[in-house]
Length: 288
Image (cartoon, rainbow, N blue to C red):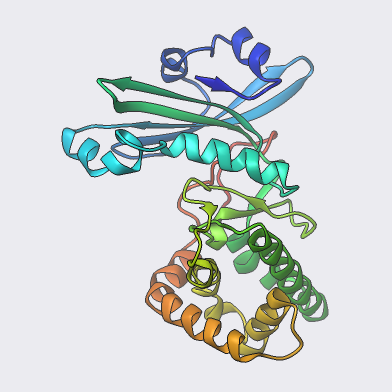
C-alpha cells in the first residue's frame, strides 16, 4: 500500500492502513459496481470538517480475466491503480487540476494481481462536462448561452493544448471524464486517467488525434461546425488552417466517426455512473 504524503495519519486513524482494511471498508454509497469493480463514495469526518473520498476497488473473478490482463498489470507492467495514482501526481505537479491522490494498494499471489484499490479525494461540487453541456448550458438565456459556449470552447482548447504541450495524452478524454466545480469554467478536473501516458517517439500525431477524437465524438450533436473549427484553431493557436492542421483534422474525424453514435447516445441518456470524484456535501450522482 502506497499513501500520498500528508494522508498517512488520516488513514491510520480510521483503520485504513492496509489493503485488507480497505477491502473491509463499508458504509458510504456504492456509486457503481460490476463483476470486477466497485466505486464507493464515503464521507469521513476530519475534525470539524468532512472530507469525501472515493474508493475504487478491482478484483479478478476468474483466471481468464487474470490472463487477459497479464501484459497490462495483472502480471507484467503497472496495475491500473498504480498508473492512475502516478498520473494524478504527475498532472498536479504540472499544475493541472486533478483529484488529489490519497493511496493505492495491491495484493498479489505468486506474482498475479488479485486485488487492488485506489483512493482519491473528491472534487467540490462536481459537474461532469457532458451534464454541463446537455443540461446546464441549454437552460441559459440565449445571449448568456452564446457567451458560455465561446468561453467553454476557448478554455477547453487552451487546456487541451497545455496538456499536449507536456506530451501527455489521456486516451480516455471523453466529456464525462472532465469535471467542473459547480458550473464554473475556471478549472477542468481530469479524471479516470489510468490510460494516460507521455506519448512515444513517432506517435505524436495519432496520440493527439485520439484525444481530440474522443472530445469531438459527441460534439457534432451539440456544437456547430464553425464552433468545432474554432476549438481546433484555439487548440493549435493558428488563425487559419495549415496543411498540417488539415491532415490532423482528417485523422481526428476518421477516429471520431465510429465513436459518434455511442457517445451521443451516452450523453443524451445521461451519466450512468458518477466519476471517481465527488462533493464534500453529497455523494449522490448528478441527475439528468
